[in-house]
Amino acid sequence: MADFSYSVNSDASEVTFAGSLNETATEQLKELAGKLKGNCTFNFRGVVHVNSVGVLAWLRFISGVIKNRKVSFEDCTPEVVSNINMIPDFAGKAEIKSVFRQYHCLACEKSSQIHIKRKDFPAADGVMANTATPVCPKCGGTVETDELDAEFFSFLQAS
Image (cartoon, rainbow, N blue to C red; front, side):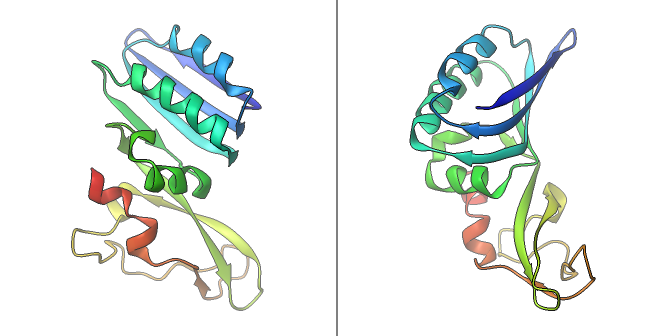
């Protein structure tokens, strides 16, 4: 992992990750695990890549962290969501509070990530809570995504 920031108050830990979750993450995550206090919030806004060695390091880390504490994930990038969907233990019992989803604008042809909060995740019937179609943040045009809602949000079936 390129780097991460870390803060602790008297009863909780907040960690913001940035860069790649890769072979360099093993020692950093071991060190971080020993510093965490209370409930943990992990923010993945800056994660741009996750490889198989990083996944293994993360699985070792999260399995120890989730014991006897509440854990939540915020601002999960598409790379993180993909791993949560493929590897159920990636999130453990963490509550996923928000994600970024990749969209492509039909008007200006730019790609962008749109932030989606838990309250706007699809319901059990697969219908998105916020029925407004996302628009391109650059030009206001119509956007689309490559995957179905059910595929992107498949992690909800496990929670």
